[in-house]
Length: 170
Image (cartoon, rainbow, N blue to C red):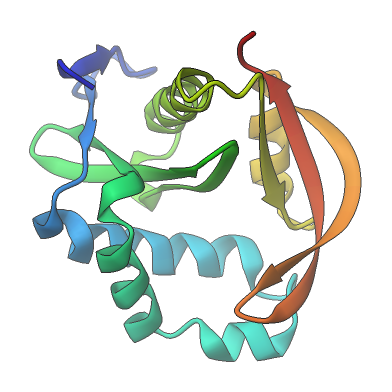
C-alpha cells in the first residue's frame, strides 16, 4: 500500500481502523493475537496433535517469518488484528478479542481481497474449520461462499476444513 488506508469503525466511540504493511517490530503483537484467536476458533475443532504443535513459541516464530505478507490493522496506537495473504489464499485473519465488532475484521478482509485481486487472481480462497461458526458467519456476511469440505494440511497434519471462495477480480 502506498498510503495508509482508513476505514471508519462500526462503533462510533472506537478509533478508526488504519491498515499498513507489517514491520518486524509488529511480530510479537501479531503472535499474541494469532495464538489467542487460534485457540478461540480451533480448540475442540482440530486434531489434538495440531493443538500440541501450536505453542506460543510456534506462533512467535511463524509471525516473525511472515512479516512480508502480513498487513496489520491499528486502532489508535494498538495493533488490533492482522491478515496474511499468500498468492490467492487468504491464509490468516485474526482480530484481538477487545477489537472484535469494531470493523477491524471487515477492513482486513477487504484488504486481503484487494491484494489477491491485485496479484492477478480472480478468485480468493480461505480455509475455516467447520465448528468455527463465528468465522463462518462473518465470511458469509462478507460475500464469501462455502465451496465444500477438504483436508487442509497444517504442520503435516490433515485438518478437516471448509473451503470458502470469493470472486475478487478479473
